[in-house]
Length: 235
Image 1: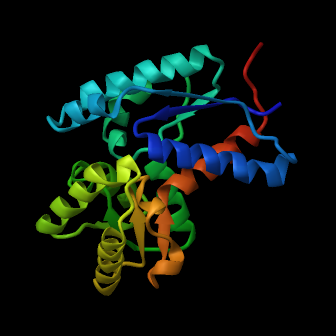
Image 2 (image 1 turned 90 degrees about the vertical axis):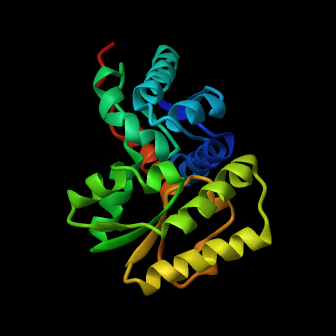
């Protein structure tokens, strides 16, 4: 028996990529057309943006918790959130959750530590790049987080919310992200984290020489690994 995965979605593009990755990766391990049971719940992105724009992480935590309760009632054994920014609220939410969570930044940090990376560039929403979650989690592995300059953070944030979360993929935007990855690499970063779960829709490793850490797919693979571990839940 595999564990039941609960996906707490925030944006539909990032959640779709995470769901697709779990199912695609599962087939090689579990057999054709097979994957763990998955339940997804999502409040409108506007609700999250409303709270995050005011740095109201208690409000964000409340949405995450309500979604966790819904997927838990559907039978989920654990939850994941394929969006980086809401993890700023995890310290508030996690102790109150009815089921355990995998933490996207902890997953990324673990992979980076295994690869002996010491300095990571972070590309994501302005809330995330200027927030505490990546520096705090990475510091536990003696890894430094590096973010773009303020004017670049504004541009990246605009591209994410005006284009990527809506599935709009412009070639000029791709070139901008390629340039940002190259710049962070030139500033001594061992790799760059695609810490917005929609960035992998427009950028992949073949586009740049600097190593990329795809937070969306790394979380999906970690969720599949967890689902395949023995389920000790009492019945």
